[in-house]
Length: 431
Image 1 (cartoon, one colour):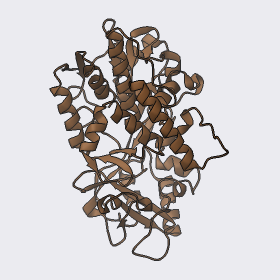
Image 2 (cartoon, rainbow, N blue to C red; image 1 turned 90 degrees about the vertical axis):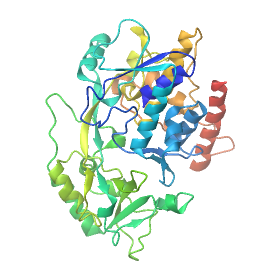
Image 3 (cartoon, rainbow, N blue to C red; image 1 turned 180 degrees about the vertical axis):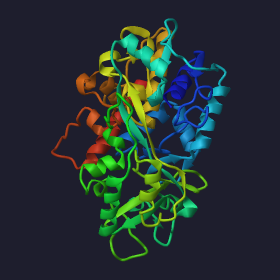
Image 4 (spheres, rainbow, N blue to C red; image 1 turned 45 degrees about the vertical axis):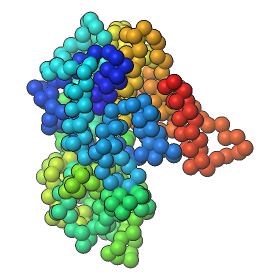
């Protein structure tokens, strides 16, 4: 995501760009293709509400800046209530086609194993930076990269879900069309079923860690078994919360609900929302088939887990995303310590613009911290504590506080004030 957006931004400012892509010559365990912007986890860019949601605001800013990822996401959008979900393969194919067709962009296939000494570079290698390049980064920075584990949720074939038990409904009936309001399948549990499910999750055989790895999970992407270990009710107040849903098959309110979100345009695949896991494959099929409606489920993909490597950006990067010790090199995307597709792409867009501006002889300051993009770069390049730096999604907690004139504001009004202020500031930054 970040590399695609960076290349697009720089080329559209008039600079020739070379994209170095190691796939498919050198693969990863999570990727299936050599396409740019391949989605390996969720197919959702999360909330598209740009008036009261921080990630929706980031969508708005990227659209305003001419971002490629948002343009292609809109072109391949799937019904998902208030979320922006995409048909993942056509989306990646479209991003790749647009980049390869750009007259100022060329593609060099092959792995970069060392930080280059000459030229201007943006390192946007994502959470699965190759081992050789990761070692080169460590050698150049004199610092150990941090790591957490990013877990992949399973995907179910829609035809294998028992719809006499499950039903279609977006939470709180969000979405303007009937299709959007039925973008989610819901599987209800009573208390006994929920308790049995929690017992099975806790008892299931888990993936072993390799020597030297640590389980420093990012709180926004916790495996369900880690959530269950934190308390038996944690899942019921997290991804399995039963609120905003009405079971048409029963007058009894469910104790917990498992949601599945459409994963492709045809509606043949659904991913289990929030069910990232490190359970072994055999255990996954046994445990997930305990969910009412999924007793005969067929899985297009089971969950997995992988190491996510990122640098200590508050220590290593300046506010133009340059490596302080080697300013000809910028970093962008998840490797900088932002979390999520949108956040990664936004940092790529910003890095591409900053690099192009510098080479064109002008300085481009970061966006104001009142904007979503500005809040993110401020966080990773100085706003966070270096000693406790961890990956972060965009959220209003990263923004300068809103002055509550005339007394306290309600949450919705306060968030609307954040987004109104951000849009004005971002438009000013764009000029």
